[in-house]
Image (cartoon, rainbow, N blue to C red; front, side, top):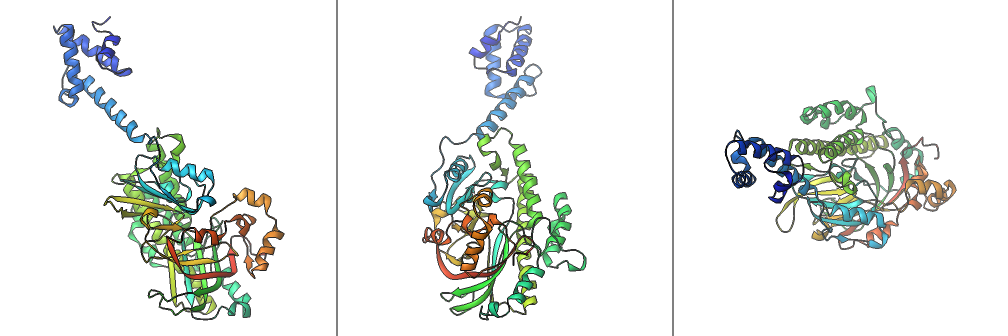
Length: 476
C-alpha cells in the first residue's frame, strides 16, 4: 500500500476518478526519492497550481498531463452547460403560437452560445429551433437553426399586364408552370432539358469533397421546385404605393410567385453538418441536441459557412431560372421583382456592438427599408412588405402564415371536398397539392400580418389564381 491513500489525496483537493491513481503513483515515486509525507503533498499541490510547468518532469509529468486533460474536460462540460434560465426574448403573436414551439425557443435561449432571439407570429414546432424562430449566436453557427432546406426563399415577379389574362387564357398560363419546372423530392431535369446558370460555374463547388459530389445534383435540379409547401403560382398583384426599387406606379398587375429552396444540395449539406455538430458535442443536453453548433472559426464551421452560402446562391439562381423559363413560355417580360431567403444565417451586429450570427429559420429579413415577401396559403393572399428595422425582432418578420395543424392532423381532419370548396370560393385553380397543404391547415395570414405591424409595412398584396404544387396535377 502506498504511503498516501486515495482518501488523503481527496482531502487535499484531488478529485475522485482515474487521476487519483496517477497521483498515488507519483506520491510513491517522491516518497522513494526521500521526501516525507508533507513534502510529497506539497509537490503534488504544486502540480495542480502550475501543471504546464511539470509536464516535462520525469516524476510528475504524467500527473501534470492528466490534470491538464481533466481541466480541459471540465471546461468543455462547462461550455456545453445550458443556462439556468432562458435569455429574455420578444414574442410576436403569442396567442397564435403553441406551447411546444415556445418550449423549443426557451431551450434555444438557454444555449451558452446564444446572444439574443425573437419569435415570429407564424411560429410552430420544428427540429431544434421552432419554425419562425430567430436566434443570434456568438462565435458559432447551428446547422439545424438554419434548417434542412437551406436558403428556402420567395421570389415575386411583376409584369406590366392585367391579371385578367389568367381568365382569358387559363390553359396557356397553367401549361407554362406545368412544363417549365419539376416538383417533388428528387425531381430533376435530364439531358437537353437541363437548365443553365452561372452559379454552376462557381469555383466553390470544388472547395470540399461534399460540394464536389453535390455539383451533379445541382446541375440536374437547377430550375426545379420542392415538395410540401413549395409552389409556383400565377396571381394578381395590387401595388398600394410606389417604391423606388420596384419602379412601378400603384395599380394592379399580373405576377408570378415562387417558394422553394436549394433542393437536394441544401438538404445534404444540412444533413452532413448537423450530424457532424452532434458528434462533436456528444454531451450536449438531449433537450437541445438538434441545436449542436459548430465553432465559426474552426474548420468544420468554416466549411459549413462556405457551403451554406453556396447553397444560398444556388437557391437564388433556382428561382431566377424558374421565373425566366415560365415568363418566356407565357411570352412575358419581367418589369420588377422582390425576393428574399428565410432559412439562412447572416453575420450581423447587435445594437451593443457585438458581432453575431443571426439564424432566421422560417423568418424574413426585415431591416430598415428591406423588401420581402410573406405568402399565405394556396388560396390565401401573400404580401410584399417593407421592413421597419425593429431591433428586438433582430430585424426579422414572419415568413408566412405558419401551420396550425401538423401534416398528419391535416390529412386526418380535412376532406378533399372541404379543401376544394375553399379554393372554389376564392376562384383558385390548383395543379397538384396534397391535403396536408390545405388552407385550413394554416393560420389566418391576416392575423399574422396584423400581429407584426411594428415589424413591417405592407407595400402590396398578391392574390393567387393558378397554383402549382407537388403532385401529378390531375386535380385541375
